[in-house]
Image (cartoon, rainbow, N blue to C red):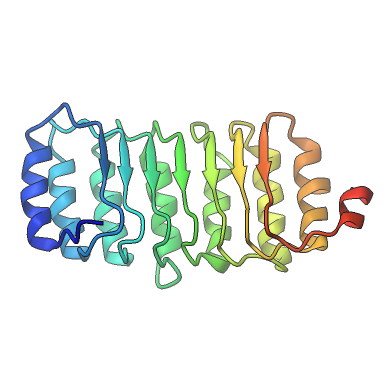
Length: 212
């Protein structure tokens, strides 16, 4: 929360492009635009950069920002943790671009998409996650996906086919009893590898849990 702007990002990009010892870069809650992200990505493309954890929460990232990141991370295989939380990915091709980033990062283990306004775009991301073999921690909380059979069918399919995710967070998504039953019967019943499932602050009733 330092109000880093686009001009500051140019300097930061230069610094990380020359420094292989910075492994964690947390830029959450700042004031840069897609122009600032473009500058950052120029630094990420450097062969000297060794960023492992990238935090970009609450920065008004948009479609252009994700396009720059997708291109940069394609040349930056060391990234294992990305925090996109509290950005608005509801418009344009944001869902597809997040999916591209997932596919681009061969060592990605931790992905935070909390409060990204994904809605129906969640289906695109869940589809690409079916074949992912690296992510073990996935946070999809606060994305208003409840009471949507298509999304929960896609989630169940992902849980059936992806046996590598160990921690899954679905908090505050208005998940209903019907949604919960799809998760249990079509997804979790076929997945024995998930260690932790968080469903806090949803609309699941005790009766639904007992029946499941």
